[in-house]
Image 1 (cartoon, one colour):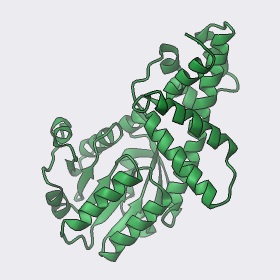
Image 2 (image 1 turned 180 degrees about the horizontal axis):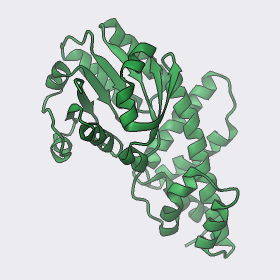
Image 3 (image 1 turned 30 degrees about the vertical axis):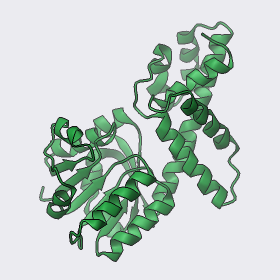
Image 4 (image 1 turned 60 degrees about the vertical axis):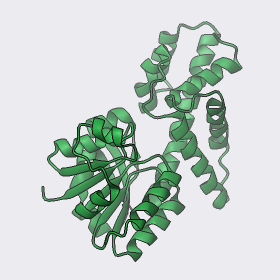
Length: 289
């Protein structure tokens, strides 16, 4: 396909996304801070970050949050590699301020940058049906839309830097709140003696009908907290959203409560579990075995 892609970040989301590009025929090499992950990925990899940056025209990053993204892009700029004309695409959910700062630093060096966080978790990532919101230069977006079309089903161009990250955070306030209210309702039904499977079947045909319940019904029933999207990640996103809301003097009552529920989940050692593990907090609060 002619595009030489370097992929950085092989977590729950990054690995299946990188594999989709590889399977689509793109010339791709991966790099990960932990070399072992790169070796185990089954994908072509580079041992050194400098080598990846030198050889690739497009570098895509998919990490944890603002801190890890800021640290990585600082390392990239410190490699001494001439990045003029290269395109960097960050698909991590980060604070809008971080996205703007990275864009500024890269453009100053003659590189291009697209901010492209994704909506969806592991299963949509594996299937290549994520929703992707993109900010940055429209021409660069259009020229590289084929990459996004491999990774996602719905792609939205959002305009200037910071807007895509802001929209992603707004989306995740809804995601976190949905997960919390569904967990509360499920625990409520259990507490009053309604059979769990029956309760969720009614909810999925009533007010609870949603993509969240579709994705989490079996996990809630089985209390399966294997990670698709972690408590730590949703807590991070809600923290960014609250910061953004405060900056804009916008009151976020429901998001604030949801944030505290996931803070409690973290405090109970559930940070690395799937975010449906917030059910455990409602079980503890209502003394359900």
